[in-house]
Amino acid sequence: MANRSQNPAATVPTLSRSEIFSADSSLLRVFLLSAPALASFSCVGSSKSNLYAITEYTLSYQHGFVKRGLVGEILRHCGYLTWHKLGEVQMVIMLLVLAACYAVFGRLLYRGPLPQAFLVLFLLLSPACLLHFAATVAHPDSLLFVLLLLAYAALVRLPAAVGPLVALAPCALALLLHESFPLLLYPVLAAIQWDRLRQGKASKTAVALHLSMFTAVFLLVLAFGKLHIPAAQLQAEAQLRTEVPLVEAIFDVVTRGFAGQWHELIAFYSWRLLAEAVLSTVVLLPYLIAAWKLLTVLNGVRRRPFPTAALVAMLVAPLLLSFLGMDLYRWCAGSLVCGLLFLVYLTESGEPEMDAAMNSLSQPFVSGAIVYGLAAGAMGAGALSLLGRVLFLISTGRG
Image (tube, rainbow, N blue to C red; front, side, top):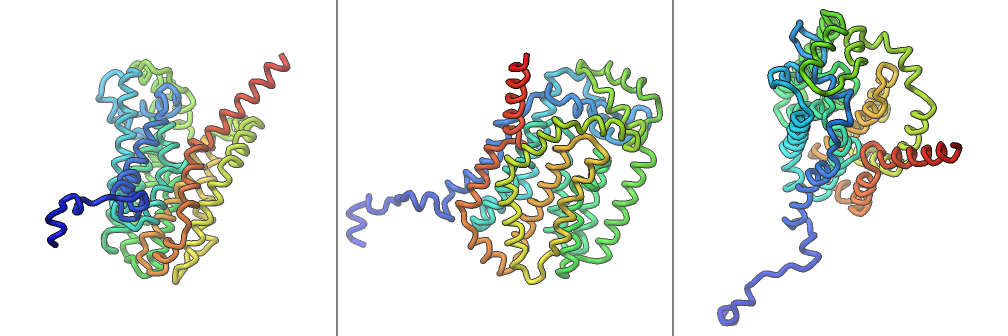
């Protein structure tokens, strides 16, 4: 003790490189917390890049209830929609996405075990989540993702008798935003509720009430959500409220529903689009393999693993929308979101075997998959850009 009092410098703590990047290092935790925001805002898309999504925000309840009209009803009271104002709307939506991510997963990123924090980062930085939403930030899927996270938090972290009923509110709002929600993102919520019932962690009564009321709201949206005036009239009125050139197809879809889109779908799925989809899948394949490996490893160590067939069904359900709508990459992103959110759910199970399995995962493997996903871009955007350049060179060479 006498030596320490004589040499104050000996009491000054120093950090080695290994300690800086240790599991208890606040510096590493700060990186984990800041990475989603830095990655998402680094690739926020231009508001002019997604006229299809922006057009949906001009639908409103001015002439009665209509599906997809909730956000448009709010924006209808915000005055004339210029490009600048739409850019502000985009930024607000992205901030909502990040706020939801940090509200639901911030504790896991900063205080949870480091392997769990990396798996949460694996979800947030995936090409299906923040990167996809940042690149198409005006799209309703961004708000659907926010509501999905709120419903997830209610199901997993609230008492069994209350969680499913609280989760019904964000699920119902999601149906008002877009009627594709039951197949696009809800499958992971259904899988979580079924798994919690199998584990004895959920109330059968609360889950039954949740499912019945959710189904009722969905049927009501489909039954009463069609336009009450001609599509041309609604489009003309909407165009008066914005300088954005609106997409006519949106108003036609709301008028006739999915049933009238078959002829357009056949024309939409051209050989070029299929080639783009195949190339994107090839580019993302290492990431997809890593995600599936993580999912099966963590599920396999549980006392009662979730059935593999049910996992596959959860991942396939969003892809079924390819037969009903023309947003192929949205459906692919939905499938990835479902799988990765279920992966994070597994890490929160609290089973001793799960902690051991997470500790056994190679951090270079997980971090390598994260880096690869960042490099691939939003749903393989890098591959699409490469294909576009190749096709351009081929066309100019022929000319």
